[in-house]
Figure (spheres, helix red, strand yellow):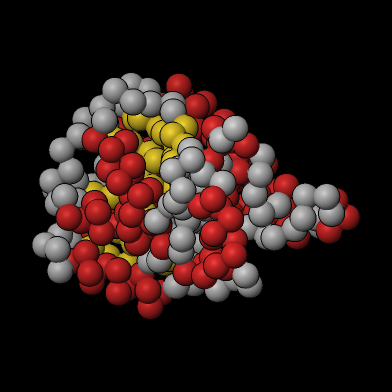
Length: 251
């Protein structure tokens, strides 16, 4: 896929990995819709940054847990930008609960995490499918996590939600072929503002880097580079690509 003149919708696109994906797509001539739920200011600024790179960009609010809002977001993207070729399902959430603390996992945590991470990914994908099938086909890129591959992460519900996204990536790739390709990226620790605001951030980051053979953690740009690769690789579908500095293969 040549990205020049194409249109991408990136959920959670105002900050972190989503913002990096927006700007990398814009640098390659792709018009972008920057979704937000709470970070309107950041999404508006990111859209303005994308426009400064010479493309059309809009910030569009929607809670991915709400099917009606998701469909309205998709309709607005198509109405204002003319088409839809790429969907990046980046919006996500977690709760930090020790895996051994089974009693600490309440229904609110299960509902919030699965409604956002899994159901939100499904809602956005379903709403985008008709437009993605037009103009020669499109692609869906789900931002998952190594939590769904190696069963380690912030909480059991989070790990389970990301594992479900990985499974859904493959089932959707099979169901939507040949017009639409569906892949997922499973990053390890990503050095973002969300992590930097947590207690013991530097210690956690140092530990994560030391645990990886490449002795580094992901930056948002490391993930966005893979977004570009998957968006432009016409024969890749149904894959979950791990980007973790080799953490999962350490001895």
